[in-house]
Image 1 (cartoon, rainbow, N blue to C red):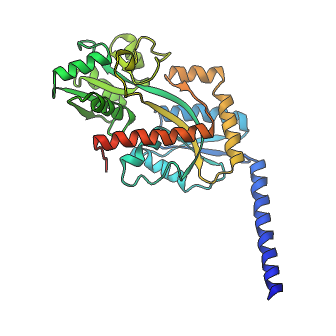
Image 2 (tube, rainbow, N blue to C red):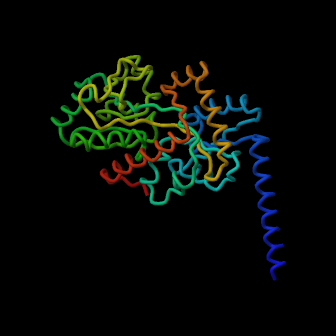
Length: 326
């Protein structure tokens, strides 16, 4: 009996050592074949564009093709859920937006847990949301907007790219913090939301900066305020909400790279180092600026803390506004 136990233990140890050696070898040889970056949205949006910039540079740095796989649907839940079930070997990654932190509070069953199911690699870039209005509107900053809505209770509205998006939640933060009687009008994307404010169909629109930037620069739209602690380099003429005394609505749209939980730390660290280097390249910085995104490229630990913090902020906003999409 003792001999059988000893043999069994020896075999178990041998198997564990073999598996461990194989894992170490795979990590040391990483990457040995193409890497897939899953984007949980359709092609052409900010997340997709940034993912393609990163993928092209990672291909050069790693010596293996990094390909984009768009899997849109359910506000990003379908694609993010797919990554949860992918092998944790560094060959399936996720480029996610702030929906990663928003959706767990927005959906009853999003299909993933940002903390338990993923390991953070880096927050790649971030962009504030912007409040825009038709130039004929009488208000020019956030404080004047608040005063206008209070003077016209029940007669004002704000458009957004859709229920549960960070622009929508930015509008809800303003409504709740300032005690405004203003209604939300969801649209099927940022383009229609911007067009609605151009046509004076809504009082203001909340959107990411890219869809509105050129119209603001041309004077076709008025940039009322940025929901950020500082002005944007791309839109220096647009003040922040806090500059005019409206606080508590700072929010932005983040784009970050993650991997399935269990991915070897050595691979996570390797990818983070490459992200840090490529995001400092002059052509990448210029591309981010053109998209109205600020480069972040932080550490896995910093990105993990951001995810937890953002989940807390958006959870409170969603509960207070009683928003549900399913």
